[in-house]
Image 1: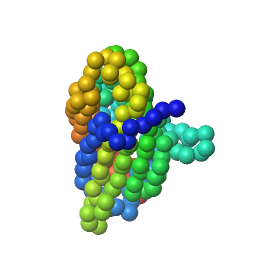
Image 2: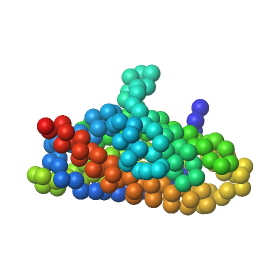
Image 3: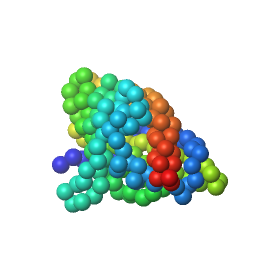
Length: 181
């Protein structure tokens, strides 16, 4: 059983981007669970490798994403805790393949939109990661301090989120415009 250390934050970042689409036209859940693989790749080149949607055994919606975060290849198994038009909260116990081997972290991806006025809204992409007990043992075995692991992950994850947020936002806007036709 994977033990998540919610008392420790490995990294966290949130970035926002204004889109020229009415709030009422945005449907983040529809966008996320029908996102074509090639469109996902365009939202953070060259980091985004693949994406697809599926379901858990008990029927909850999932988004499977494969991406590079710094030097780690990360396979995200996002399960939708909230999957609404204006808000999705996705939680993954993610596999991370590093130059030192494989480990796991928890990643919480929060996608939301808020109304600015009748024609614009603001998309926010928030990502928080927590270590697993397995991750803490992994870095200890490889002589990596918690502070170093946290600093490296914060830098690489923050940079990744900063680059993908406006591209996700514009992709969501394009999907909303297509649905309005």
